[in-house]
Image 1: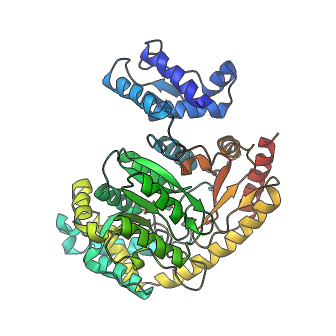
Image 2 (image 1 turned 180 degrees about the vertical axis):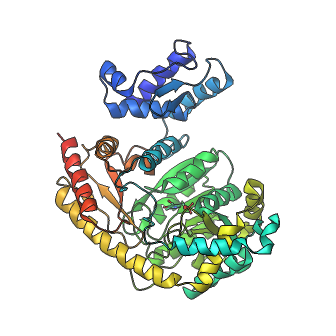
Image 3 (image 1 turned 135 degrees about the vertical axis):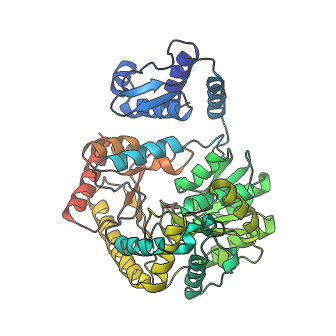
Length: 479
Ligand SMILES: Cc1ncc(COP(=O)(O)O)c(C=O)c1O
């Protein structure tokens, strides 16, 4: 058992035993760290774990408070959760997935600080055409069709659906517009697709490392994750996946074959094909996260898994969050043979997707230079990736390794094992810089010396200084 789990369990026993009561304030992280001779990071992780078990609540500026009365149902449930987490399991299979607390608190601190956003999952929106979109939204707001609620009902606004189908066609892929469902960002698309193909308790295969939205969807549904070895350039190990599937039932596999977040690779086409063939043999749905597909640095867009699929087993998810605006929250799903289930779940989940942003984006795509905007974005990201790689290789501790992203806007950095990414995260935050600790990308602890950096912000002396500072702090962590 890890030190932080032990501390969390000790505190939980005190809560359940009535020593700590509902509303009691816990000692500060620093006090507990001093008293128990544990690092600040260990104590913080213990508190976060207790928060995720529903036993603590953090109040800004005030600290951590016990939130349950001992003996309540929730406290009993929390006791069960301890069992689930501490029971030894085979390395790769998670008993439960429990990353959302850590991710949420990290994202909050990123949003709350006026910090250099190297840890942000979002693209820098400075160059995004938000004003134009807002003008289209205003104009769409005058449209009489908006008076009816049904404008937003699934599958979504017909004009937007047509534009999305047209974009696939422009990239050489024919999709049936009748398959497209508009969702609240790719996040909802991923969640609904997973819910349509698997049920609580099922085992879902994911890449390792994987983007945490995939883990969140698994966590939300009470499923289990099995992490499949993933090559930093070729993607998920299809043979390993076949081996795992031979020994246990895998309900679905979630992958990001193009510009994977955080690794940045593109799966070679023959591997994509092999993966789809395996899925077909096993009748195993593949949930394809394609959110960065438009952000390629090469001459041509990469192929999707969907383009190899003949059986409707690939559920493909996309979004405008990475290329146009993340605040309109417009994404989509192409759920293959599961289309009707996903449509029904969408309806049950949120009834509609707000029509105004759908109409604004549809109008923008019809009339304004999306392609030119994308070309500028791709060029800038490719240059910024090279610059950030070079600075990392120069200023991070010896032995640091860096990904070579082929698209998207994130860099994955492996530092020497002595560097704890959570500690580095805190040290960087204290200097007004955020980073993405590797802990967020796995249900295991294996990426504790990895970080993800976002290079979407235009290069500037401030960004360069921030990256150099993180490198120096990483070196300090080794002492
Ligand atoms: C890899 C990846 N998948 C999914 C999402 C979610 O996209 P959306 O904002 O459209 O919900 C993000 C956004 O951060 C992402 O980076």
